[in-house]
Image (cartoon, rainbow, N blue to C red; front, top):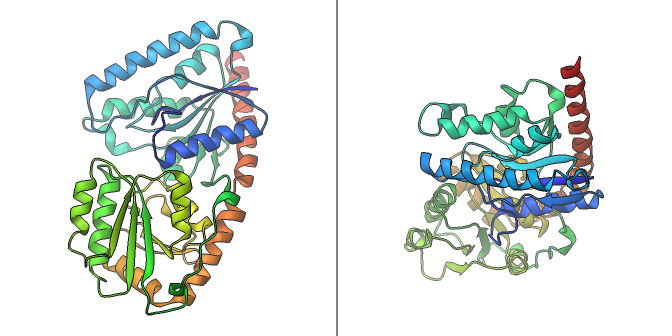
Length: 381
């Protein structure tokens, strides 16, 4: 069938560098593998970094234009999709198009990775939060990638059949090179090669970078080096945060293309990224596919992509001393790193390779269509 695919957080195919863009491409790939024709909704993103009534009004106006364009295009039945699929919907990026078109053409509406924030209904985000919730309530079915999102939706999406779990996944794991062995894997003397990959932008990414700098400063006497991959407007602040560490310990590679990132992951021993309030982070799966164990905070959606105690060690949320102790333990115990790294590779390659996601996605499409049909019958009776 034909599926209209919409991404409010970031315009699909904009060339940007982020995990959500990668996940959007992966979802489209799976839909196409299932035999469906995907039509990308031609819309700019509705994301807002700060609450701004004028910007929200502009987004709503632009959304009306896109809805009008597609309404005209879809008047021909052969051009009309059978379902609207939105990836991401929350108060910073409400879906302003999907519910309108689903209602206008009486189509099933499926949403992946929606999240709701009750506290945003009091304050400057209230209008955007209400728009996001209206879309969430309109959806026939939700795909949740983290327990945190499922918990948030369960407060007002009461029907269990409207929510399916879709654990984050990584397509093309066979293309991820395996970690290259090194003396550091067996020695307590040579520097252990740490690596982190993230954009250097304000918000949660910058907060995690600063937390990582403070964390590593606590164990600067241990034998490690750190490679940082990423770039963005906060790079000067990030570089300043690491400036007091011993010379030669940290190297900045800036923005790299994905093949180069995967090659760098394979050339290191341990993935260290705090992940404070991270949605989940596909890069954790990429690192594990390469055979790297993970050290991070037990924060946000990180537990959805790191098997606690099996593929990595998670310190309590925000506990920098605890994270420093976790990294120190992994630096000093090569056997533990090897065991976690082997399990991490199996986890990413066998459990999160997209096979399970493909089956869940197929069931979700059927479920959304079936529930929409029941709604039509109920409304007619």
